Length: 236
Image 1 (cartoon, rainbow, N blue to C red):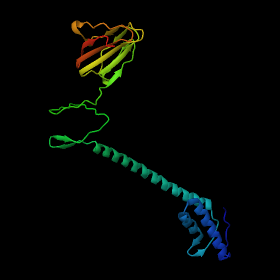
Image 2 (cartoon, rainbow, N blue to C red; image 1 turned 135 degrees about the horizontal axis):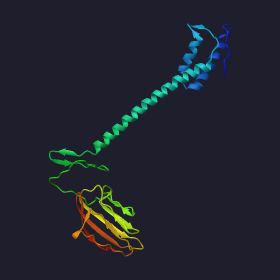
Image 3 (cartoon, rainbow, N blue to C red; image 1 turned 135 degrees about the vertical axis):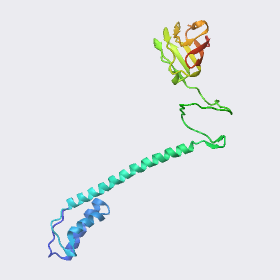
Image 4 (tube, helix red, strand yellow; image 1 turned 45 degrees about the horizontal axis):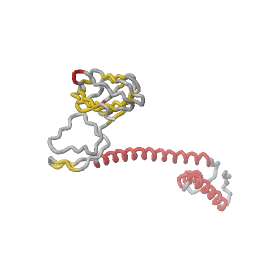
């Protein structure tokens, strides 16, 4: 709302009305209006002398808004820093919650983590390992002319044959036990040729059961390089 210039000859009541209108405008635009009111009235009253010149309210309010926005920007930046600090605190808290406490040679407490990746050795000299509630990672191999088996995705694998296939040498092999389920599709009649990394008695791979929907199971013991296998045919 524009405010008319007021000459020095105006009465005190006119000055008061005009000033009140100015306060209403600044309050509506800036909430409490205190900062803007002070900056505006500094242009109106100087050294207790009543003076009204040409007052550009829009310019004054724009300046005040700029100062307010600058304050909000600083507050947002502080909030980002605080959020990062909270994130670090949460990570530290989670690590603390999953800490196993050591008392002498006895480990107490419960370690609860989704995955543990160990790049070196874990050695146990006593006690028992409870695997009753554990599942060994398994996978379904993709049927193709040459079937691949990446052991890092599971030591137990299942493949359904839709034709005569070749099984390439397993990759990412470790010392341990491996199991392969070979299933015929609804038509049956498919063969599977295993490459040289799979070893059997007399270097002769056993023939598959070719009945439709039949299942053969290969079990392998690995030395970390090759798989030495045994065979259970037609397990249903």
